[in-house]
Image (cartoon, rainbow, N blue to C red; front, side, top):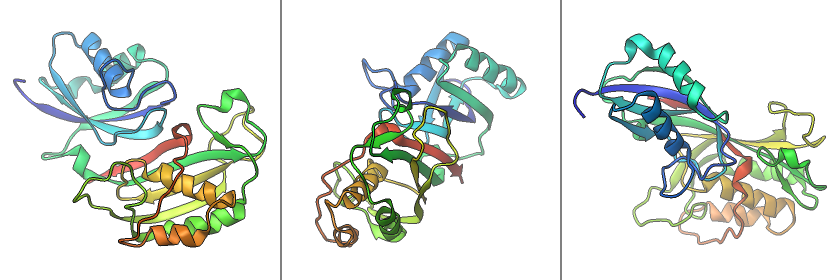
Length: 260
């Protein structure tokens, strides 16, 4: 790449029909679709993309960022660039805004204060149109117990039992500043169930599957298959506790994030 001009692009997407953010051979991904559209909108131009978060298959985002490194200066044409991209992207992916990146930005390392939300219901099955947004857990759940148990995640803990394929030397201590379950009031539709809930989690960073395994543990507690004390033990350094359930990905949304 000749010259280098770096931008932060803020994006939102519904991930239900995609195999996650990261480009994968033979798979439809968010990054892959953005690359394809960039090549169409700016033929012959070289570029590089770095995502601030690698969301899994079917996970969505209200507000996420990626770093675009371009061979030419786009500062005088940012509104036109966003409009052209949105005209050619599929309707479940949309660019929100774009600005020049500060010098030295590394969007992977500098992404902080992430907030995730997980929408769910229990009992009778949801309307089929709810599937991309809300996970339905069959059977009844003790929501009050789940609310109380969710508070155990708040603070600085070892989350080594709440991730997949843990590598040696991985930093597993994470600080969760907020973890609460409430009735959902922010995402609504007339085909949503009458009562449904949202788990809201905030922190500086999360490991792969961490939120989904936290949600899975809370479902096990709410269904009477796990005692809250077991979950509390799982957060203690050196304790090996199996969390046998990873909640489905379609209820998970990256709601917001900040960059240093």
